[in-house]
Image 1 (tube, chains in turn red, green):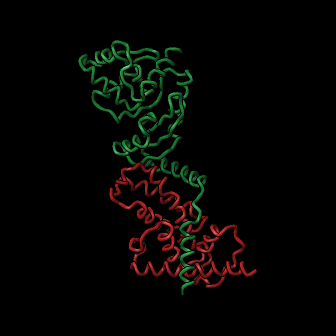
Image 2 (cartoon, rainbow over the protein chains, first blue to last red):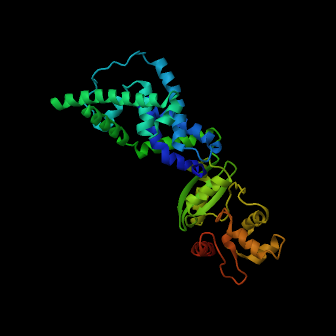
Image 3 (spheres, one colour):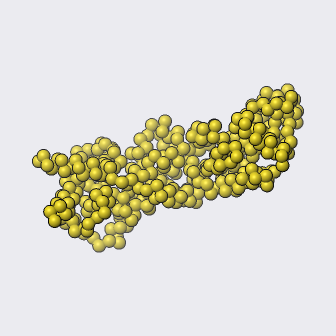
Length: 165
Length: 208
């Protein structure tokens, strides 16, 4: 039923959500490229998409693959860090809590970041996230919970620091 | 433990409600998509809307040419849905492909253009309807013919009603001038854009 819609409606309905997912997974700077590659690829495949497909899950699946390609390139360019240090963030005073959260998301390990994006931003259930990432539903749920915990830790770190001064 | 859970909830709420990308940002990405879809050869249908004296019009084109002109009263969403079903769902609002058509329609309403010089994609009509629609541009600017005359010219004098149907289902009103076909007694007959639009077009052409 959904696929009967012109592709323009798909872009209008899901474009912003997919961009937020891309920002969370590949970072702000590369999000535009990830978004563009996702939608051109989706438009190519659109005519053959089954009528009962879940459009949002389908787009996130494509975005996931495009993001992995981009992360691979990022890793080749960036200085490799094995373990993301678990410590209070040294980020400056951000303008709003809204923009601040993205800076924190960047510090969370890749898999946790992906699960957080797909679950909290795209609203996908863990079952579908497990299908996208591989692995079990429980593992996806655990990764989300770990991600939220570390996010809370860095977030609370900067916040309590700000509040106490 | 309680405070932990509350904190997690706050973070997930913050994520879920964090600011959406700006409209400007989304428009920029949309334009980029229009360009790359065109380059990749997958922009099957491009469309835009333009303001005219007879209301907002939708213009849609394939690579082959102008495919559809629609009046707002036809409901643009419905028109696009139908194009999606009949032609292709790879549809984007991509005004660039419609630049020439939009320009000529504007000239027409400014009374600076009497015939359209555009590539047309006639794939939405076939058979007798297409035959009639192909004849319509031969009715000159400011002239009219009756449904019966048109039936005779296309070689089927008894097909008056079918000519009416062909005019009523013209996918390219204005550009293919079905508004120049009237009843034998000179009354308007029907029009896809409504009788007010038909009158406005005929009066504009008569005044020129």
